[in-house]
Image 1: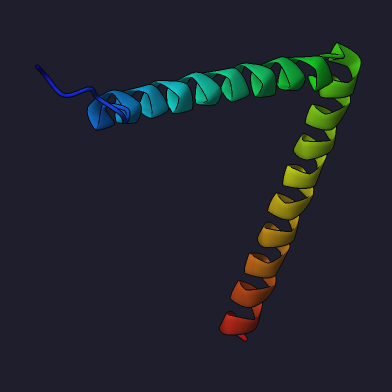
Image 2: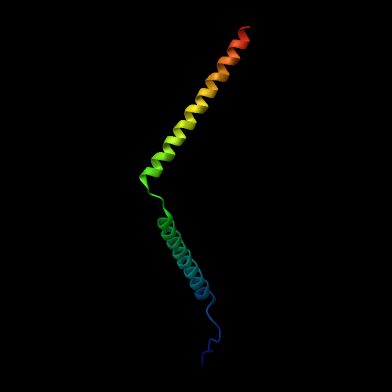
Length: 78
């Protein structure tokens, strides 16, 4: 007569745990994506305002760089 198997098959237990971990990871990823979509700011006016602000800041920095270069060059020739 064959022995009765009292415990659980270790390979099966590992496989079940791995599948459960993958399933939970996918569920978490779905929830994060759903929450990100909920909080997404897609107002075009706000985006345009931020873009103008960035461009203005970029132009200001470029002007400062030009000023510093011109001052440096003028002082180098004196």
